[in-house]
Image (cartoon, rainbow, N blue to C red; front, side, top):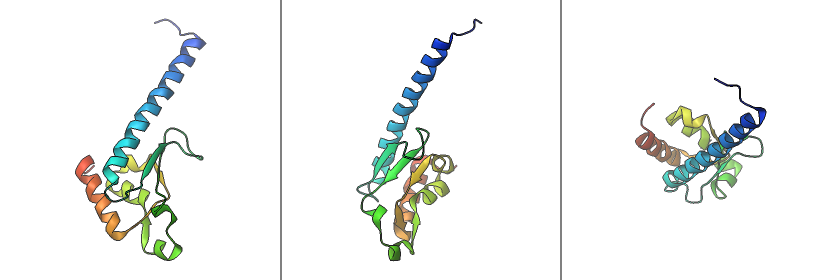
Length: 117
C-alpha cells in the first residue's frame, strides 16, 4: 500500500464533508416530512451557529416562540426525539417546545418509522 500525498488526503477530506452535507440534507428532508403533521412549519438545517455538519437543527417559528407560561407545560422537542430514537437524538439540536399531546404524537411517529431501538 502506497503512502498518500497530502493533496490526496485533503481531497478525500473535502469529498467526505460534501458527502456528509448531502446525507445531512437528505435526513433534514426526511425529518421535515415525518414531523410536519405535528409541527406544520418545521424546518431542518444541517449545522447551526454553535455546531458543525454533524448536527441537524430543527426550527419552528410558531413553536419555537411559545411564551414562558406555555413552556412550563411543554418539553423540548430534542428530548422527545432522544427518548424515541437515541441515535437520532445525538445529532439533533432544537429550541422547539411541544405540549404533552404533541410530544406523544411525535414519539409515536418516530417509533413507527424508526422502530424501537
